[in-house]
Amino acid sequence: MISRRQILPLVVMATLAGCSDWPDPVIPGAESARAAPWPALVPLSDILQGGPVASEPVQPSASRIAALEARAAALRGQVVDGATRTRMARGVDLGAFQGAR
Image (cartoon, rainbow, N blue to C red; front, side, top):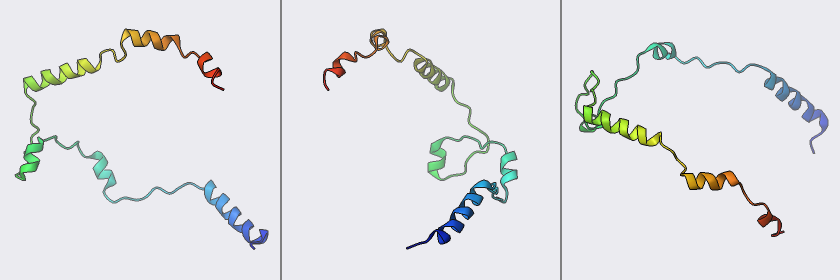
């Protein structure tokens, strides 16, 4: 059986360890990575072909931009239809649950 004399030093050390600040790890190159520019986005087909990846970013076509804007507009629309919103506003009838006890 473990006595209080054996447990007390462990509790004191764990408590003191919890009061100290955690040291920040030193990661070589972290500062230069933080200051680096964002990587260029390239088409996936170029990556999968295994060929050289263009260093200049590819500009999206006008049709792609229009498709993405239409998709964004559809996502901004109403999520819950009017009938469901009205039903949700009425709330839950708790009387049905109280009879089940």
